[in-house]
Every structure is written in structure tokens, then in C-alpha cells.
Image (cartoon, rainbow, N blue to C red):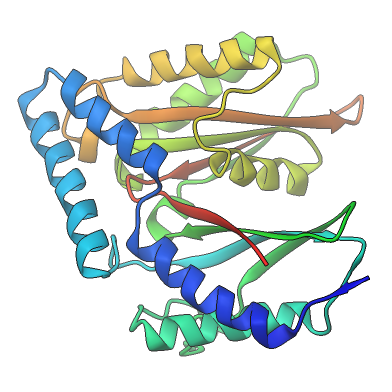
Length: 277
């Protein structure tokens, strides 16, 4: 049995939340660069150049990529051969320490109705999964308010086909994409129940540029990306052929009477990372 001191987790999380806020993931940055090179719309190319330069400055000066330093959403895989007292408090202590010491904007309010800021960006949202072995893997997705507000959950009839699902997704993107700071990294969840579908859509984002191993789903991802970019919304909603950088789909078994569909629109400052403790 491997034991991990909670203070060690706190220190790792404190530096982790700062790094994720300061450094755009390599795959997102490479997508932006490729999109700029491929873009034919002059204004879109200029916007993409600004986003790339913004990323460079943030990395160099160790300052936030975006002023909305977001909500911390953690996916934690806990090995069954690990013992650690107070995992959740340790993670929240790390968020508190990292945001205060990094002078990151505090965005969490304690009550959705009373709206009083907690002044340390906690509590984080933490999802855990028990896995074999003695490793502790922690993934973090920073969610800004603007793009999170453009999320979608629809409970579809189980008889709906891919064509109908595609139409629903395209209609939502057409209406909401410009408000979510495109170009977007789009996560789609299919299956489970309503809560599982939303969770899958966020896990789809942190999968990065890896294609789904299911060939049918991979083809749907590619088809959706092409159709979304043909909408002409473009970077910052100002036109162009780069509305989305990627479309990732995650699926899960579901009830015979259900077909949940969830979308997470992740903005041009899509921020995620992974560490092992």
C-alpha cells in the first residue's frame, strides 16, 4: 500500500493550477498555428495571429492566458493500492494556495443565489475514479464562465439517427459559438444518463487531438468538424473557416429508452493538463 502525504498533493496542485492557466496545451497551440496558416480570411488570420501571440506572452511572462481564470474541474484516478487522508481537502488547499500566490482571479461564489465570492476560487469540482495499481493521476480542465454558459444538454428520442444528432449540434453551434470565444475545442457526450453525458463531454475535451478508437465515431467527429467550419462563424465570430479546432466525442452505454446528448464548447483558451502524484 502506497501512502501519499496530503501536503505533497497540495503543493503539486498549487503549481499545477498556475501552469494550466499560464500555458496553452501544445496540441491546442499547434491547432491554432495550423489554422492560421490555412485560413484564407484576412480578418480571421489576424485574430488567430493575436491568439498565438497572446499565448506566447502568457507563457513567457507566466501570466494568465485569459482574464477568466475559471472554475477548476478535476478528474482524479485513484489507484486502489493508494492511501491518502483528506484527498479532497488537499486538492482544494492546492487550488487556494495556487490562486492566491499566483494572483489569479477568484471566480467562485459560495451560493448560486447569494453570489458571495469565496475569495480563494474554491471549492473545485472533483470527480474521482478508482483504478488498479498505486498511481494517482490528476487531470484539470479550467472552465471559463462564457464558454460554460454555452453548454447543451438534450434528452433525445432513442430512435434519433446520426443525421438528426448532427442537425441539433450544428443548430446549437450556429446560435452559440460566437459567444463562446471561437475557435472552439468541442466535446460531445453521448449516452449514460443526463449527468454522465455532460461529464463525458468535458472528458472529451481533455482527450486532446487523439481520435476516437471507434471508427464510426471517429468518422462522425471528422464530419462534424468539417460541417461546423463550413458555417463561416470563424475566430471571434468575425468570419472565416476556423470555427472549431477539433470535435471529440465520448460515448457510454445507456438505457433502451434514452439517448442523452451533451455539448461542451471550450474556448480558444482551452486550458487543461495532467500530472501524476
